[in-house]
Amino acid sequence: MKRLSWAIFLATVVSAYAQTQERKIINDAAEALGGKDRILLVKAIKVEGYGQLAYQNGGGNPTGSPDAPQKWINTNGVERWFDLEHSRMRLKQRLVQDFVFAYARNMTGISVNQVLDGDIAYNVAPDGRAVRATEAAARERRIAMLNNPVVLIRTALEPAAKLAHPRTSGNLQIVDLTTPKGDQLTLAVNSATHLPAWVSWVGPNTNLGDITFRTSWVGYTPEKGVMLPIGYNTTSDWRNVVQDKLYVDKNSVDVPVDDLAAPDAVKSVSPPNPQMNVQVIPVAKGIWFLKGTIGNSTLFEFDDHLTLFEAYANEAMAKAIIDKARTVVPSKPLTEVIISHHHFDHTGGLRTAVAEGLTIISQRGNEAIFREMTSRPAKLFPDELGKNPKPLKFKPVDDKLVLKDNSMEVVIYRVIANNHMPLGVMAYVPRDRLVAEGDLVDEGWDIVFWGNSYPDTVKYWNLQVEKDLPVHGNIHTYPEVIDFLKKQTANAQKLCDKVEAAGLSMQGCPVRQTF
Ligand SMILES: [Zn+2]
Image 1: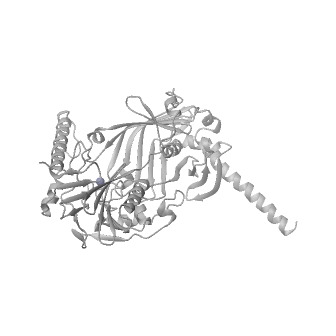
Image 2: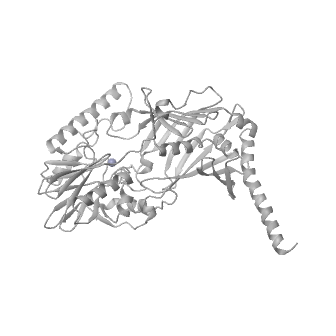
Image 3: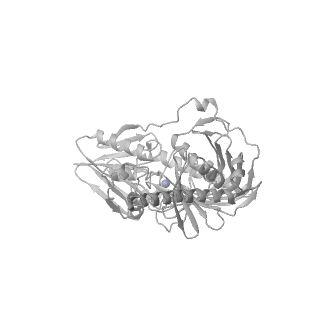
């Protein structure tokens, strides 16, 4: 044979072999799980247990330090239903925040009932009302459906599934999978047992850009001829945060499944695509309250530039706020944004703000996490910063930072006595005696465990506050703020009393900040 034909021949053999390799990994895994024929016949799987989720993907801890204690959300009464006959899935669980929060329902438990029917995602309220969920939710649930090893291998066995790049790492055989629906995942199988060891995938994250999650499965146990794990552990590639733990109490195979078909009321509407609006409310000379659909900002006009307080929620909200701010005083550039604290709802627009060229002002202790957040790539799910990476420009506040020229004086103070955000800052305008703040008060809260922080901060820095411009809710007078905090603190105490009377205990009880 001539040299060229040899090369073609070898390439063909190698390619055929490679195909066999990746197919073999899946076929062996199918055998280990109970046999290809058996798992193709499975109609339904029900997984019941309990577990924990990392609050805000690990971005809701007291501070942004990697050493800060992790806040957990307990998941009680977990039911994961996989209706393989109809390509449907349901996740039912009760979410109980295992740390002090500002809504009683978050601490006593919120029931979640999330369904995927083919490509249609919908949520069922406790009263039975079904509401269509977003496209993003549908994608997340398609991935969640593949979070079970039997469902995953079944999907990989489908003729339309694409397998690629078989490789070995330690005692694992690894293969990339593109599902018939186009979702990309990576699967690892134990070389000795051929049981699936983990699955990983990439998703979008407004705080962190592309985020890779990896779910490991342990403790395979037979159930009606099918092997199913009793432990699930999901970590993210950001600080290896343990994102999701599931302790399985019971696996069931081919038990009757509830009808998970999307009701007509859900099918007949398009997935929601919420629009982010911003209302401009003039507050004082050179100060505007920018009231956004899901979070507010405040705009300050200096001699030659504009400064914003907060870039809340996500890219869409932050971009709407930034764009609107630029129209308020078009002759002056928006150059900086003060960010109240690092929590991932309050930094949902951080990457956007950096992409927009703004300097970030916050407490010095937030710089490191802000640098981590803004240096991560977003290539598979590009956001503004992913498309146009820029370094973080950071101006630190220790206890106090004065921003002052002939037009405006804004003094940034570190908040005092705050168990929710010890590294929080707020902005004070002495001329108008007003404060712009995030998470010091919210008229919508029903309980609070850090109610003293606002008045303590005002007293500590000897301020004369008359008006509050909050990230959450509406503008209020300072006496109204104090009334909210007193009422919410009393409600927290009442909740603690109720729990105590039932012979139970709850985090944050008794309430230690009291009026
Ligand atoms: Zn917060």
